[in-house]
Structure formats: C-alpha cells, structure tokens
Image (cartoon, rainbow, N blue to C red):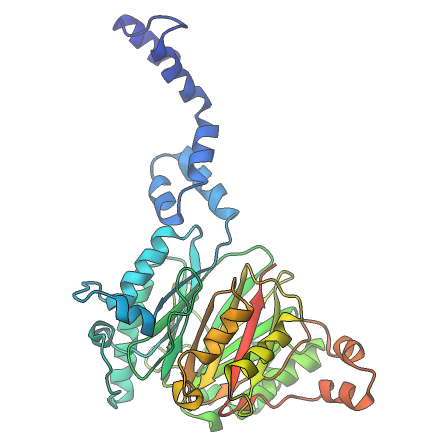
Length: 429
C-alpha cells in the first residue's frame, strides 16, 4: 500500500486525504471483507474460476464452499421436451443443456451425481424422439454406457462420482420444483447432485453377480464397511428380480445382527447400471471389463434421516397416492434440505392411472419444497419403513404395544416388489 501511494505521489495522482483517489486506494487494505461479501453471492462454478487468482482468493473460496450444502437437480422430462428448441450441440443433448444450466447457478460443488436415464448412448441423448432399445452384446453395452458416464463426469468436479441407471422411464422436477413430466420409453433423464454435507456420508459401491451368491456374504455389511449409523441404502440392479433375493436378505440380516438397526433399503431393477468414481480406482472386486450387476448408494451419519412408503396395486387414483404420501408427511421430516427418490413399476404410469404424472404430481402436492427424481423399472425394492434410524427394538417399542406388531418389526422384511411404487424421503438435517 505504501509503495502504491508513493508511486501515485510521484505521478501527481495523489492529492491527500480529501482526494477521491485516496478512498479508492484505501479500500484495498480492507478488501478481505469486500471479497467475503462478494463471494457469498457467487455460484460454485464462478468461485472455481476465482480460486485461481491468488492464494488469498483460493482460501476464501474454500471457506465459502465449505459452508454450502445445496442439493442440485437437473431433469429433461416430457413437459420440458415440449418446450425445448432443437439443434442443441451438447453431447448429452437437451439434458446436457439443463445440466449445464444447473451447474452454472448451483451454489455447492457436487460430489455425487445419481443419473436415471432412458438414454444409453450419446446418440440417444441427441434424438429427442421416441426410440426402441436395440439389443447389443454385453461388451458393446458396457462401452456405450461408459461413454455416457464419461460425458456426465466431464461436467463435474474431478473428485466426484457418477452412478448411471439406464431405465425404462424417468420422473423428476423443474428448477422451480414443479413436475417435469414423467417419460416412458423415450428420452427422459433425471439427475440428483449431492455436495459434501456435514454429518452426512455418501458411499457408492459396485457389486458383481459372483460376489452376491457366496456363503461368506453372511457378514456382508461388515465386509463392505457399511457404517453402523447407515440410515438408507439405494439399490439399483440389472437382469431381473431373481438375482436380488439373496442379496437383500443378507443386507437386512447384516444390519439387524451387526447393529440392531433396520435402515431404509429401496431401489429398482433397471436395464443396465454403471458407475464412474475416480476416487475408487483400487476398489476391491472392480472389473472394468464387466458391468456390475448391482450398485448401492449408502447414506450414513448423524444428520441423515430417512423413511419409505410403498404404493401397491390398490392405489389407483391421485387421491389415494396423495393419502399414502401423507403418511410420510406425518413423520415430520423437513421438506427443505431433503431429497426424494421414486421407483415405480413400468406397468404403472399413464396407462395404469389413465392420466399423466399421477405419482410424481401427488408427491409434489404433499412435499412442494422437496426435489424428486426417479425411474420406471422392471421391479421395485422397499417396504413401509418409518423407523427413522432408530434401533429395531426401539422402533418396536414405540410403534405399538401389540406383541405381534413388535415381532413383525424384528423380522426381515420382504423388499422385492412388483407393480408398486416405492418412495424414499431423505433428510439431511
């Protein structure tokens, strides 16, 4: 500052304390507060550019981002397809444009992306019209899906993971949380973006078929390092329901016997599943030449709470769907700083209800402040689970004085469903 003042005096540009130029220079000595206030309004992507200016700016950017825990989402659904202009040059088509717009304004750095898409190849992302899924060999499918995975990852920070679920349909919401329109058998894609959050740990893992049938999986939970305070496990599998029964039995048994808990376990059966995580290059059991038969996304930590509800084939109207979602509402989980996942049978949707967006629309009526993403699949996983992370014994004691009800809570639940809709509500504090 003194050097700058001396140079201005020599050049005749410094006129003393009453000069406007003096005020302009003086603010430089108080710039930390100015930078802090300015950075607090900038999105994460812009802050990333600012962090390269100098060490002081880098430190301030790091401090600002550490305190941000904003969940992001991007969807290209039926309603948005009617509004989109053609000729999009993004390699992920209109969905890529929506994802770019989300990342441009998102306040937090996304560390995990969970993508549900009817598109397998980059060409399908560009089509914007209904298409048929052509059968390809496993090697071709793996390479095709990997290109789509890499396209999503290229838009995210380096230290991030992408879970990609190739499905029969999708549902999601617009930036204003209104339904984006359920799609079935065409071009829909929905994506949830999760940052690092205090008191929340998100872990993504691959699982292969030969690992799911061995007897030593009795200690599955402990062997795979799933924490004792796990509140929710999302499970995405491919290849049909007959391959998942043993897996879910062992998963539930592991939590109940190891920790005495019954976390929410939900998900669905998709066409293909894949994962790209640059931080897990030495993951045990990973085989880059094969697609995994199953993916799990585990949510644990003191700030996580989760619950799930199942809409069975008796739920045939919007009013009945809304009534089921009210059961979740009564649990008192906050609508904000939460995220919902919806997994519905491909046999439901508009053909079942004879109306558009019944399940996703009914959810938004009950939870107008909560983003929702999900997909249609060949089977669902889940059950009514209102334990909110409590132990099995505690949940049984609080749930009912009826002995049969308490004993039922302690038994392994039947998680394999068909012709249902399973909804999971996750709260992050």
